[in-house]
Image 1 (cartoon, rainbow, N blue to C red):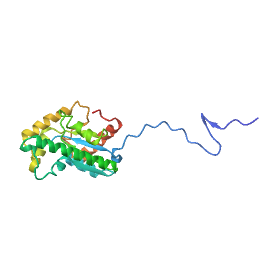
Image 2: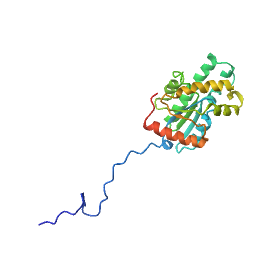
Image 3: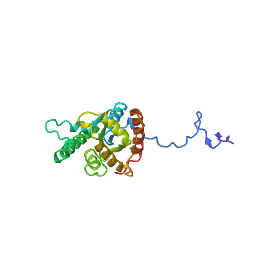
Image 4: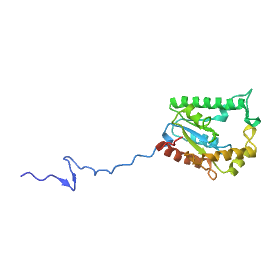
Length: 219
């Protein structure tokens, strides 16, 4: 009569050596935004810290990343530059639209060559067609928008430290900040960086992007 099969509990032992216990099913790993090629749109009022955070975030990623600032591109126009501070008109509106298209082209070009990008712009929630909708057309549906919105006292303080045509009046800063509050309830992720320094804000941005990659916002 043959010997009984060699078993331990309910796990059969095959001939030739021991076998490991079956592993429990593993949950899928959370997306790692630091190593993912992506396009991010950082939205916020003047003085929110968009440019500083975007530069820091781009500098500290593990994959090649470009920072594309709408204001920098807009200021490529030297002779004939239309500064909205001198009066918002058809010319300044046209230059903003042109700058957005140029930034969108640059972003698509970087992405096509495996380079991530982060763009920053003061997009207003009450003008989705020319703002958020325009960025979606220019860059693509995979663009991940995040709103950076500190308190009014913070943006006023930061604006006061600016020089040149990027410094706005307190009244204008307050007006822009009030319009930006419309992003609450929009479904877009919002970071209040009132009490955060730049590295802390960039770390939270990574956390927000990980959630956005796993469950993209509807916009």
